[in-house]
Image 1 (cartoon, rainbow, N blue to C red):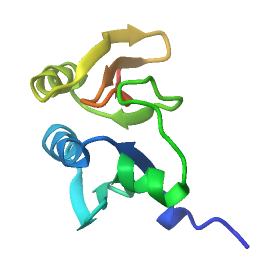
Image 2 (cartoon, helix red, strand yellow):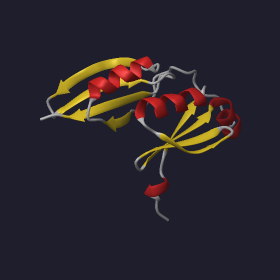
Image 3 (tube, rainbow, N blue to C red):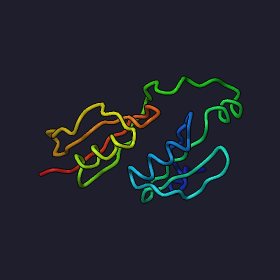
Amino acid sequence: MAILPERSLLLLIAANPQRLIEFYTAGLGFTISQQMPHYAELTLGSFILALTDTPFMAKFLGMEFAAPNVPARFVISLHSDAVDDDAARLLTLGATIIMPPTDQPWQQRICYLADPEGNIFEVAQRIE
């Protein structure tokens, strides 16, 4: 038995999956590769981001989930060639800046944001 990386994905449990679909497609360039009731897959290159709604997953697993906007214990890391422009555009789509674009000593300019449901993601740009 082995993990199959070509089908590995990150699944976000969302209060409003449609809003996040719009945010990730319009703001970050993801495309919808699959969509059905209670589930969608978005792709960016080989990265797959899946979304499902909270009531469906709670019923499916027989458990309760934390309220939206509770900080997650993971960060989605995406790379850009224009982090400042991306951060400005994402703000207009409902993102919240956690840390503005900042040069780091490891030759990256990074920005941390939260999507409309509070999921944290990083946009990083390589700098010389």
